[in-house]
Length: 254
Image 1 (tube, rainbow, N blue to C red):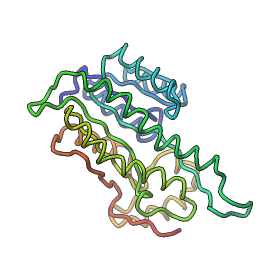
Image 2: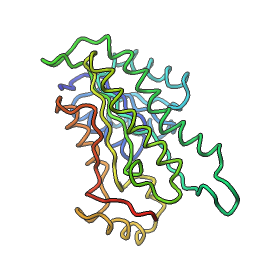
Image 3: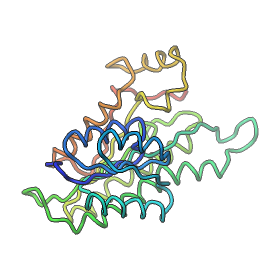
Image 4: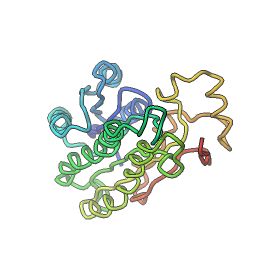
């Protein structure tokens, strides 16, 4: 797909996977709406790529609708949506202070799963009215972000794994439903990537985690995630699939 002057939306675009993806799409000529809860982070990225920074809570219907409307107003209807916004928390189902906080569980589901669906529904509602731009009748591409925790959730990841498992399960029915409109839907399930989630860990701990990856024996780079997004956009036969980006790691219980 030719992205020259095409509108794109990247959630969680202020850091990590989202930042790398926003920059990669902009380098190919896309006009990127950088959505992030952190307004200053979104602004920093948008300023560097001539994009549009939008502060938004993806889990809130009105906030997300307003953000999408702003992108449409400034850049036009998006051809690409990449959902990277998400949070990761660790809490045991039964911990030292009692049962897992239901509010915390709900928050993770709201941001990671409901937030993903929220942007998917809003952007696809605009995409369906676009003119096809590929020989097959393609109109746009939506890429969501899950995690290997959807498959091998560790102790303390009940909420996170449930939320990412929901994103995995959403992929095929969304792709099937939107296929008639020429919109593809895929999900990337990253392993251990150098993102802010790992930023608070010591180098020793990061090295220990990297040693668990069969090959390459290191943490992944956000630019590798962005490169996969680009390939998904270009390869029209990819649809309805969840792609692991993990160096063949299979997470242990702890």
